[in-house]
Image (cartoon, rainbow, N blue to C red):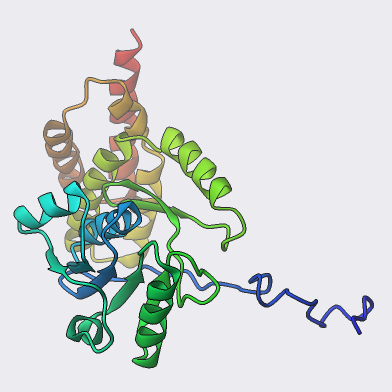
Length: 256
């Protein structure tokens, strides 16, 4: 009998509903690594797109495919196997990640069980609780990658938060982070003192670069050259602070 006074007791159905699941977030490097998607419809297409953005080597297994998947094959971006899924598929044994994304629950279950028997990380589109991982909603802005998950509680809420993030973090972040990366690499090579470098990085975060980029009159190459020249003349925290003053002047000129 269920004891409401015992907070450690699992309620009937709680495990099945995934109530007690806690996921470990990580960024997985699948560049040039084999990944398998079973299914050829819209769901599979979405899984494939995310893998291609991460530059994985993707194989898709299905008797039929969407036009987009066929187009991607013609572009040489993935491999299509035009056959039903079968146990013992060599591509399953080789895959780093496996996605079961058909519209047939029995096929998805077979893929999941076969993959798990081989110790593979597998995601089943219709069985989040049985999956080894779930895929969050994603916002990409160049080097910036934002993910949202409700741990399966409400995919609709995850999509809503994703839309809010897309509004807050626009395309300017791609330019911003590319520029910061160039400047950071320069500082790492030319400023030997770790404490001085960290102070420079802290000051760089206060630069109103995003305001300058959003102003519409921003030339990344020109700005990079000017900032590198200023830092080269004074590779210190004081130099970084001075560069920030110069950036503020550029932003102020946009408001005139």
